[in-house]
Image (cartoon, rainbow, N blue to C red; front, side, top):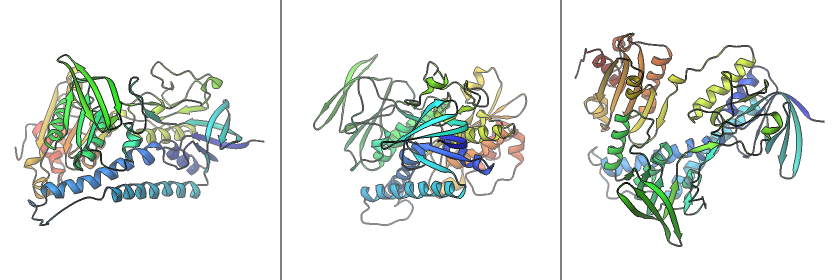
Length: 465
């Protein structure tokens, strides 16, 4: 006899576990199933959290190494302990995994470690280590996330051709690292190992890295990373790879001709694809679209009225916080609410040094929409707090609609951009105007003063420009 639940969640990542908790808060009986033994999904176990932990460790080391003496620090030698960095990363991950497990226990959410497969629209078969169990649920939420995409001609071997998963668990820092793909994951992991003395080359097919960014931000990020020692080969396509005992050799082509790049390890970071294999979607008449995503309506329902899908398995930007918001939205809709997600106010962040953060429309998108833009740009080299901390690279750009005065976008490359962007998120979500931001009192000295100054510049009322 199968166990009966109000909600079954397939996938315990940031979308799934948050949805499970929200459902339990509504008094629903909830079960969550994941093929990984630990909660948190890719983001917590082999993605966002371990990468940011390594970025923080390597950033502190690099900052002291290169800027320490200018800050008045004196030392005879500085070095790093890579093994300890990895241990700290593992400890951070473990502590957060345990935190989610504690939340599940507090909210009486049952967790199954195993693979879930649809039997029909209300029943799932859970397989784990040779045993099987059937569960029944009124509602089922698919939140199985995504997996790295391999190049057809260069399959992963988890040794010399690796994905981000293996790159987060190297036993030692490679001497030479080739990164195929200049997206968010590529530039972040390139930054980690570049700071630790690795010779890093990023290879990108397009003429810009992180091409969804505002063009000016993308170009500035390239400039800064180059100044830090990362090499870039843009508008280059990798055609093949030779794997040898002592490393790899990549063959590239472009309009200028062909060339080779040698490295100890190659990180392939060309994107991710939705993970929907072995779910038995055909048994519930769910057909993937041409890009491999599960089609859903405005409240994330599939063709089955009681089955929902969120996060990386549906079309859209693959972001942990997007999935979490969608998970909450599904549950609140089930319980009779009318929640909405304003995707224009969902931010993107890249945790390089300096950080990059963006929300809303880029300058290029504003002009493509035939809107008249009011643009204010402030460089951090003129910000007092940035001068105090010695973090003066980058700038902040705010974009408003000249007709209505409302904020359309905010784009930042600079210190603590990941935190500053929250102001832009609220401004867009609440339809704030440039005038409202310009009239607000920002604490002095802070980096956030750049937001006020940018709004003033956009309004042709500069105070310090």
